[in-house]
Length: 199
Ligand SMILES: [Zn+2]
Image (cartoon, rainbow, N blue to C red; front, side, top):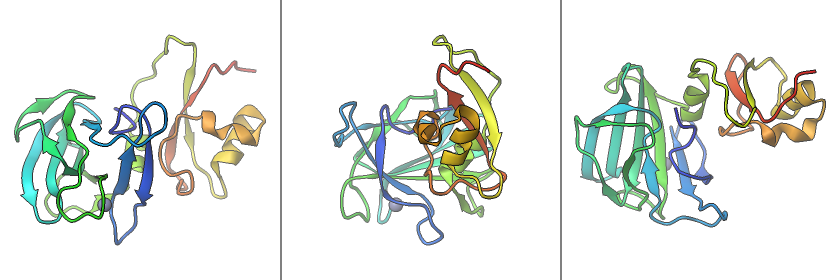
């Protein structure tokens, strides 16, 4: 599972809310500048549930459904589409390019998610969905470790960093790509604790 639909980072131009049930993201290059036309990548191996051209609102959009059929991801306003409905895609495969099709004021990706099925189900917070999806423990080659942390009332990423590192300022070291201001109580955050030495 990729934590981001882009190769490098992104900036958020509109947050998830009831009125706007997804994130508007603009891809960044490795040097931190905006990446116009960036490849949009599948967050996980999936079947293309819908590849749709020229929707009046979503423009060119792609919806993928995970192979276990539990998660769907929506990628809207694409400049073009590189896949077809029904096609299987691998994690990280390019679905299209970030664009400005449909109802937009500028180029960005609208990134949305649903659980279980598309028709009739509500949109959910995509980064919370990604972070709650846990995979078997891995041992990355660089010696870093993963841990799962369940958010408690009153927690912030700074407080969690204080508990784990003894230093509240080290929270950016967590591999947490959701909005740091909207961690939810009970949410399981999978943290990559870089080069963390126990004790
Ligand atoms: Zn949007």
